[in-house]
Image (spheres, rainbow, N blue to C red):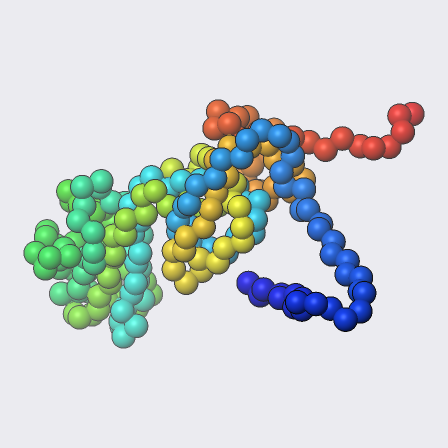
Amino acid sequence: MTLNVSIIGDNTAQPFVRAETYIPDQLIAGNLKLVTEQIIIASGAYKRGTVLGQVSTLNVETVATSTNTGNGSVGSISVEDAAPLGAYTLTATAATTFSVTDPEGTALAEATVGTAYTSDDLNFTITAGATAFVAGDSFTLTVVDAIGTFTECVKTATDGSQTPVAVLVDDVDASAAPVEGSGYMMGEFNARALIYDASWTLPALRAALRPYSIFIKSSVSAADPS
């Protein structure tokens, strides 16, 4: 943010006139006390007024080694609540089998391509591509603690953020990494100034936010009644 500094001398030699204009964005729409809280935005770039949800599950970031011969993928990934944080390494020992090690380097049960893999820590399925895997191809699945972070609320999400619980106070850019921001946890807000995902309708969002003391108010036309 750029700060514009106005320089005012101790004793100006001549009279002068200065005008400054405050233009509110009309996000705040009532006198209900505003309650804010410092929060962590998990990822993404969002504007002031974005409706947020709170993540309540661990996340898994998947990376395929750039030198892989096979062009298959890893999908259907889920993580158990007690899973250790860190990188799980999947390394091909043949075209259809992978060794699996946890973040501490402990060997887990072997994974078979095309078969759902389940364990006390991590669940996934390795799918073959048009080019077969060869020994040495690998994937890294990193379990990240995202519990308590916030992101844009999407009604179809399954990580806890599908429940709207806050409104973003200021613009944030967490595209590269999680960043600290602020969220309104209580207040009255103008429906026209809110930013929300297309998975929501305004009536559904209004009802979902009400239990959290966040109230959406619609603007009223100033036109003369007919």
